[in-house]
Image (cartoon, rainbow, N blue to C red; front, side, top):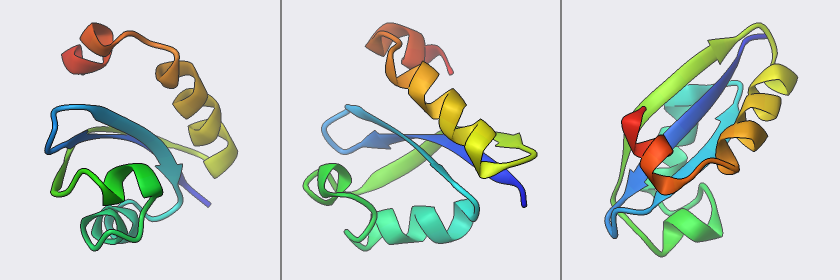
Length: 77
């Protein structure tokens, strides 16, 4: 099953990095305040970047890598 790593920009201009098997559903969950506690407090959010992988585990590994990036580096994507 395919997986996706994604970056959301929150209303306060912070970034949220996540991974999922269904990108559209997950973004809709975030918009409804159901995606995570972090984004729930920072609505609305906007999808600004994503990558597709062969599996969710690969997407999760990429998520963890990008979470370690600086804000400036995340913004470039």
